[in-house]
Image (cartoon, rainbow, N blue to C red):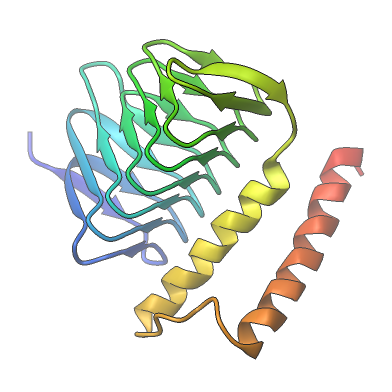
Length: 193
């Protein structure tokens, strides 16, 4: 079977990223410097607005795909192996999420955490430690989405050769408008209106 790599036209993949096998990268998602995605046996899905940051390693095992949910941030040096990350999650620097683990939507995984095989965290979990444990429950969808929006903006700017997307008055205006829009969206979804 040949490789099947499907990158949405609005996605950004840095030229140094290495992607092999069966991989789908959704709208406005981004894959950053020196990230490696290898999907020799199961597939990898990076959903809309998600970001896979510098030096992330994503790998699959037979029957164990990797799914990164919409508007999730997989930060620097993370390893994802045969696991599922829900929408609106943030996976902290140098964390490892291993085979069969599931991180529920709206969760945060702390830096250097190790989520061993088949670890399961419900939505809105705060997960830390090695081995990892859930220490709190908090809806982190809004701050996690804001982080993802930063990377969506950064990707659009990198595409144009602008490597200073988070600096200056234009950024301050964008940030204020984005915060206002997202706060209204998430307040509305929290009340079910």
